[in-house]
Amino acid sequence: QRPTRVRLIEVGPRDGLQNEPHPVPLSAKHQLLEDLADAGLDYLEAGSFVHPQRVPQMADSDALFQAMNRRCGVTYAALTPNMKGLERALAVGADEVALFAASSETFSQKNINCSIAESLERFAPVIAAATNAGLPVRGYISCVLGCPYEGAVTPGAVLTLTRELLAMGCREVSLGDTIGVGTAGDTERLLAHLLPEVGPERLAVHFHDTYGQALANILVALNAGIATIDSAVAGLGGCPFAPGAAGNVATEDVVYLLNGLGIEHGVDLDKLILAGERICSVLERDNASRAARAYLNR
Ligand code: HMG
Ligand code: MG
Image 1 (spheres, rainbow, N blue to C red):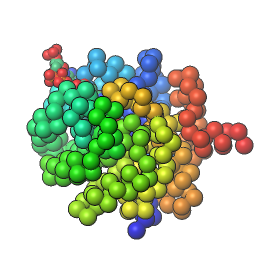
Image 2 (image 1 turned 90 degrees about the vertical axis):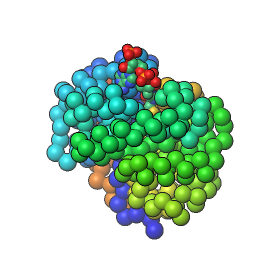
Image 3 (image 1 turned 180 degrees about the vertical axis):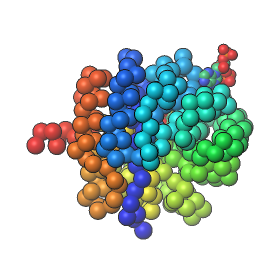
Image 4 (image 1 turned 45 degrees about the horizontal axis):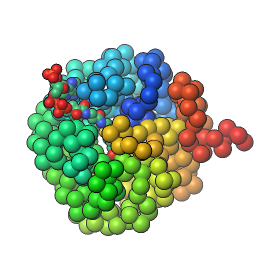
C-alpha cells in the first residue's frame, strides 16, 4: 500500500519564510526558487497573497511572481485566502492556488479573521473563479492534530472539513499539524478516521517538527498510502498565528527517509542541501535539517 513514488510539495519559499523576523531580499527569494528547481523539486509554493500587514514577509509575492524565472514543468503556487488574494494571484500568473481553513474555531479567527463556516463561504467564489481561470485549487486544514489555543482537535472535525473542501472543488487536502504536536499514534488515528471515506490520493500531509515527530508521522502516512508530502528546505518555517510552532519538516530529511524506503521523488539531495545552506546563510540561521548537517560534517 506504500506508494512507489512521492510528490514533494516544497513550501520553504512560503511557509519557510513567512515567519522570518527580518526582511528577506527579493533576490534571495528568487535564488531560492532557482536552487529548489535545480534540485528537481517541481512544486514550489512560492508566495502568499494575504494581507501585507498581517504577514509582511509575503508582501512582495506579487513582485516575486513577476520577476521570477519560470521553469518548464514546475508548478509555482501561492496561498489565496479570499477573492482579493485570488485576483492578485491571477494578475501575476500563479499556476495553482491554495486555500487554508482550520479545524479549530479559535485558530480560524486568529489566522484568517473569520469562523470556519464563514471561511467556507469565502472560499466558494474563490474556487469558482480559480476553476474558471483554469487554476487547480489545493486546500489546507490547519491544526489537525492540535490547536495552540483550544488544545485537542477531534478527527471528526477534520473529516467534516476535508469532505467540504473536496466537495467544493479542492483537488487535494493537505492535513496540517501546524504546531507540530502530533505523534505517530495520533496520525494513525486521524488517518484511520479519514481513509475509509477519502482516498489517499486526495490527501497530503504537512507536518511541523516542533516535537521531532514529523518523520515518524510521515512514515505512518506513507504506510497508509499517502503519496504527497509538504516540506521545507532546511526545516524553515512557522506560522505567525501559531505561537511556539517550529519549522516544517526538512525536505532533505524527507528525501533521506524516502531514499531508505526506495521511494522515488525526483530530487537531487546534494543540490537540495546546497539550496538549504544558501538560504540559511542569507537568514543567518542554522540549518535545521539533520540530514543536511550530517552530510556537511561527513
Ligand atoms: P480580513 O481583515 O478579514 O479581510 O482579512 P477583509 O476582507 O475584511 O478586508 C480588510 C482589508 O484587508 C481591506 O483593506 C482589504 O482590501 C484587505 P481596506 O479596505 O481596509 O484598506 N485585504 C487584502 N489585502 C491584500 N491581499 C488580500 C487581502 N484580503 C483583504 N488577500 C485575511 C482576511 C485572510 C486577508 C487576513 O486575515 C490575512 O491576511 N491573514 C493572514 C493569514 C496567513 O497568511 N496566515 C499564515 C498562512 S497559513 C499557515 O501558515 C498554515 C499552513 O502552513 C498549514 C499549516 O501549517 O497548518 C498553510
Ligand atoms: Mg504550515
